[in-house]
Image 1 (cartoon, rainbow, N blue to C red):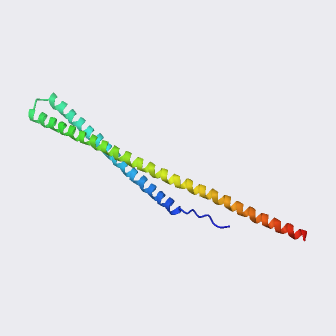
Image 2 (image 1 turned 90 degrees about the horizontal axis):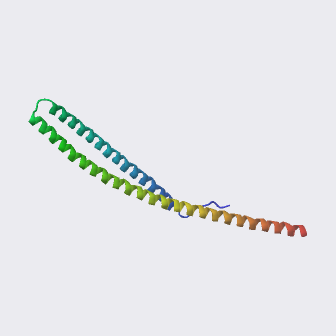
Image 3 (image 1 turned 30 degrees about the vertical axis):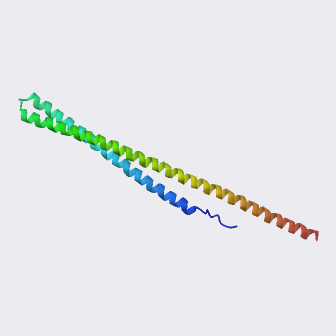
Length: 148
């Protein structure tokens, strides 16, 4: 009995490698997204601290210079937060693109696996048919031997 060999096995292996690479890329982009989200959380916490500091300074004796500096720091934090929200938005797009690419690659791989399975089923049918022919020949031979 000859061994099953899928003629497009190398393409299937390439598809599997592409899928592994796409999964890694997706994971990296997702990790970057989480980093960007963490930065945003830290910026918001820092802004809240500046707001708290401003409130404390307003409760004490009025020092216009310190209040102005704190407000400028808060405005700067607002700018950084806006930039960070934009960075998160861009990173979300990157993650979505990687996810779509991964899905496409997985579909390609699954298609090749189905083709391989169909080829294997066809191989089994051929082997069964060949085995049946051999059995029929053997039975015919033995039957003709018995008659003689």
